[in-house]
Length: 322
Image 1 (cartoon, rainbow, N blue to C red):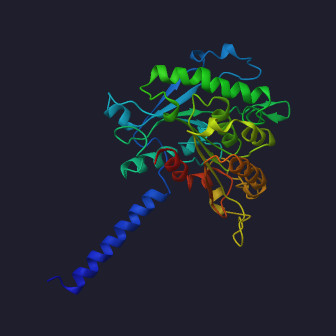
Image 2: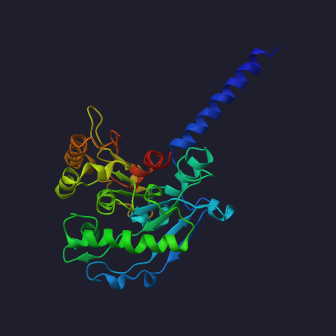
Image 3: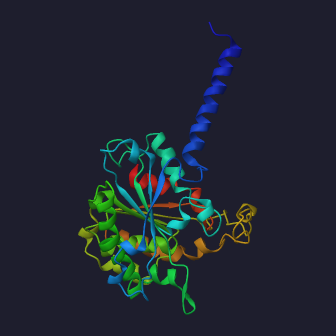
């Protein structure tokens, strides 16, 4: 028979293991490539000449290949297109000094066999890191145009470039699963709007969209409300946000936002997720009125920055691939 001390030790060890497993699945997730590697597609190879360079300036695109890509040379992989790609994987590349820790989350979810809808080996997807433009067009950041109001030329040119130029190039270079059901897109803030725009504008090429703290504008809400419902029947849509909720308010200051070597002054945009709530509510209403299925999650007190999205990055990934 086991002694009471031994039973107590076994129970303590089990509790510790369960806590470790829970922390591994819920974050914080590790920074960096997590065993994967980056491949650069030079701008010169991407036929930017098809587009007005004043509207869509050329830029290199990086592609993250999970370690399983090289370990299993006969296996094809789904693809996740990522807006603001420079902020997604490596803290050192992000404009705030913190990233979404996307590769770290995918690697942990794969290790725990949580990615059941990727491929035969349940590996992470290939991730196409699409950097946003950082210059301005007059007083307006170009990112706000490319990811902005979907009725204007900048946003439409961006969506067409991703769908009609970048996707065929990625499919030709890498072992992808090119069908729409294996092609996803993710973004935060205006990048969340740009992600849903791809689903709307190119529904035969993109099947899933994850929108974190999306800045939905009236034109995309109107588009959803007027698009035939059959367009959405085979689609996966994930929406989330933070902000104020009941007695939980976003703190004015979170000192952890200011420990970054880059942009240490970053305020964490404490007000923005609450400010964006009406646009999200309007989008939910448009989806509900058409009977379109979607997943919505609210993270009370969540901030509008990369640290905030990193804390919950597993949730959209599980919605897309879990």
